[in-house]
Image (cartoon, rainbow, N blue to C red; front, top):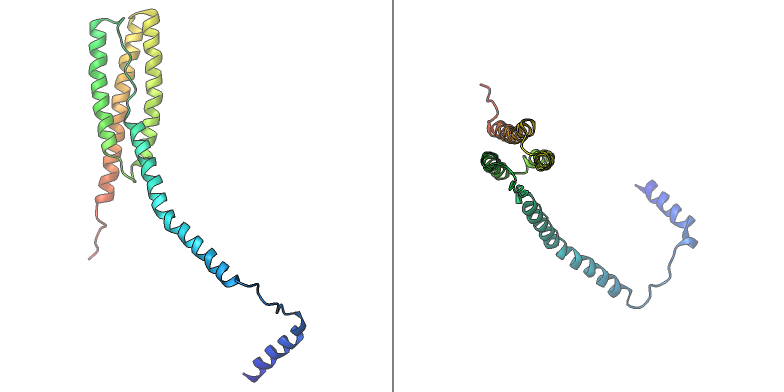
Length: 178
């Protein structure tokens, strides 16, 4: 123990003239304490602000995801075409509602990807409707329209099945060994 103390004493003696021993200015301690209080007060508001920002973000995402794109008005089409479009649109809306009901942290990415793919299919459908307006009701255009509607429905059903399988996997308890 004496040897360690001797080493420390030797070190202090070597640096004796190098120490900064100037007194601190008047009120230094009070200014330091005030700065510490300011940092703490900022932290007090950080958690409620982050919660509020998260809620606002979630509400915005929910608002924009729930809004279904308006279905085009088929005023130029025949009654059968309008009825077919109406039936498929109702089914698609119900499947989208089911998909939105399944939203959870585990399914968030799957649902976001599915909605992105639905936007692509919706854009294709819009092109078909424009073609229908431009060229009238021809068999290939009507087939393309129905195929797009069927594809959207089967895609949503597949995504829902995938989500349900994931939920079942999560809910299955680990196997117990004996």
